[in-house]
Image 1 (spheres, helix red, strand yellow):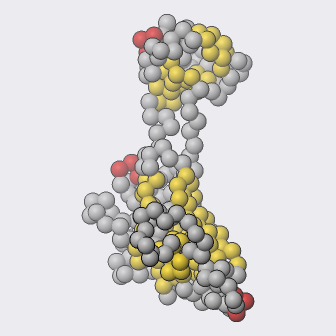
Image 2 (cartoon, helix red, strand yellow):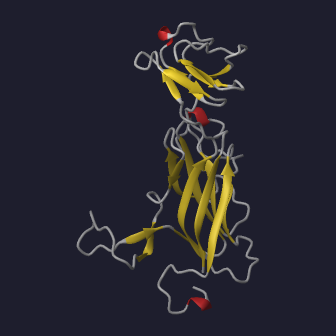
Image 3 (spheres, helix red, strand yellow):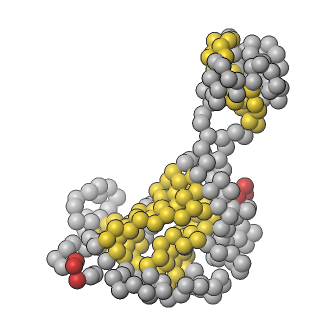
Length: 259
């Protein structure tokens, strides 16, 4: 701990740390081999650099106690759903609103592309019975078809690594040390990684929830201590729909502090 940290409780830091990186096609690991280790030719992105080049005089290491993952893609929920239950309902649409045709049999005029999601693109407000509107492009009603999988965000797994004493870690040589992997569930926008981060050595100072702990077990925060010269890298595991990475992208953000 630095000279300015005298008489402080553990984990109190001198300078805040906030780093963020966007992950898209930076794949790591192999689904066919069931391994999370970085493969030859892969290059995960640097999330936190704790002076790997040893070029700073005021860096004695630090701690990362928060990592979040936020998808970059967003899909609004449909404004209206047309099915047997809602059939005959009067709706009013402005440009950009979305209609989900869940049942084509209730429509007076067949939808241009059948079952799926339609975005209203007309310039003026469109009001009418939901089953009587013409869900088709090229007409005065002005709808575009978004497909049946509109808004479907697949589950995606991000993998985190730690390196020490190198600015050019080599896949397969043990330079990328696995920290943890975190899966963003399908159709979930933002998640926190605290549940899979390692426990910090210093017990929590204040009282907290002790459910599940033994009578002498201390409460502990979770996070990652980093020595000077360490780095944290992150990439996306190439499986399922993400075989080439997560094309829409996600921002991975780390917060903590420097000692």
